[in-house]
Image 1 (cartoon, one colour):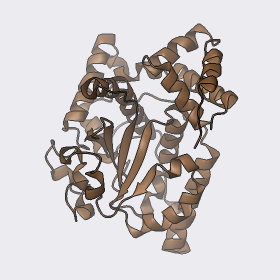
Image 2: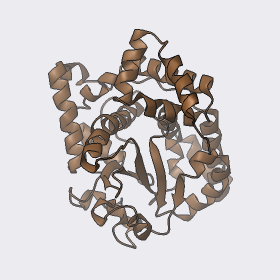
Image 3: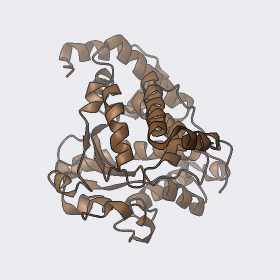
Length: 344
């Protein structure tokens, strides 16, 4: 475990005070009034190495400036029916809070199809959720629970995970790289639930490749994970796919038939309604809605971390072993991600 001393933080703080005014302004927007917390996160991500953490943070601020990330919450994905398709194919939502007040985000890994839009819309939506979490959800949680809150937990539903999802590796690697480089140490724990055999087999191979601090954050729970998760959150905050044993096989698959109050993946769920309304109101205030009505908000994709590339290659290799070389080779020949598709 890396120990970040006050002396290390002070040295890093002095370095950041030397950056130019534009970088300073963007850093202020990023840290939301808590610069020390931001410095510590980047230090942890680089094992306490000040020069590496400094480069990482300056690169992050540059990325935010170049891609106008400070304005991304005023760039709605429109029309609403098209955005509904994004939500139905990129299964993510917030189901509640832990007993300590951390937001609980649910991710339908196994049944997300990412087939209703181009990669740019999915990246835009992912960053918007990150920014809304950090700018709106976390500050509100601090007031509600009267304690410092800057991180979340994620519950990953592996229901439906199958070989064909190799087609998503490029997109998932892009999203992972964005999070690793620009939102480090924002997730306290990852809880894996409803894991099929194919995940278990891959996990044994991938786990040793992860950095120790990441490995310690991941817990693979039995079944839907309900009993373990109830130790850290109330029943009402459980993701819908964790609320009853035996729900895993159809948990996310039948999400479209669940009520909007229960299914946190749905655009009709309270979290997504609040998020989408907020973005639309911000757009109206900035008179920017017309500018984004016909195209996605393109964000430059970072160079993937070598570790992420190696993990993706390992997963692909393991899938090949599990399914047979010929069958997977045929599937891989058909894999594409349409980067130019701008409509449904």
